[in-house]
Image 1 (spheres, one colour):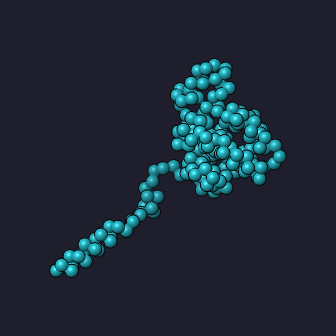
Image 2 (cartoon, helix red, strand yellow):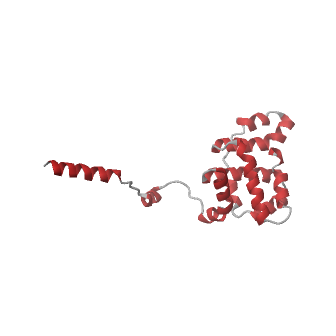
Image 3 (cartoon, one colour):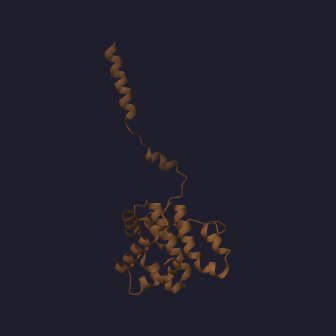
Amino acid sequence: MKLSAVFGLFLVSATLSIPVTAGWFDDLTSKEEVKPQAAQTQNNDLVSSVMTQLGLNQSQAEGGLGSLLSLAQSSLNSNEFGSIASAIPGVDALLSAAPELDNESGMSGLLAKAGDFGSSLQGGAQVYDAFEKLGISKELAAPMIDIVKGYLDANAGDGTTDMLMKGLGAIL
C-alpha cells in the first residue's frame, strides 16, 4: 500500500511540475492588436541591433526608435525626412510604436508652458518622456541614435545621416 501511495504522489508531482502551454489557444482568444508580420521582419535588423546592444525588449526598441524618428519627422520637411524614411523599411510601424504622450505633464508639458524658449526644447523633452513611459533610461538616447546612424551609414545614401542629425538637433 505504501508503495502505491508513494508512486501516486510521485506521478502527481511530476505531472504538476511539467510546464503546460496552450499558446495556440491564446492566439485564438487573444484580443490584442497584432502588428503586421511584414513590418516586424522588415525592421528586424535595426530593431534587433537596438535590442541586442542596449538590452531592450522589442516594444521598447520599437517605441524608442519611433519616438526618435517622430522627432526627426516633426523637425524636418517632408523631402528631408523622406530620405530617412526610404532607408528604414517599415518606418510607419516604428512611428506608430512611439507612445502617445500627455502634453500637459512631464518635462514636455512644462516646456510647453515656457513660451518660445520652451517650444524649441519641447521635441527633445518629448523623446525623454516617451523613453520614461517605455521604461528606457534617457541615457540610452545617445547610444540609440548612434545605432540608427550606423544603420543609415550602411543602408542609405550620402547625406541621410546628416538629415537624421539635423532632425534630432533638439536632443543633441
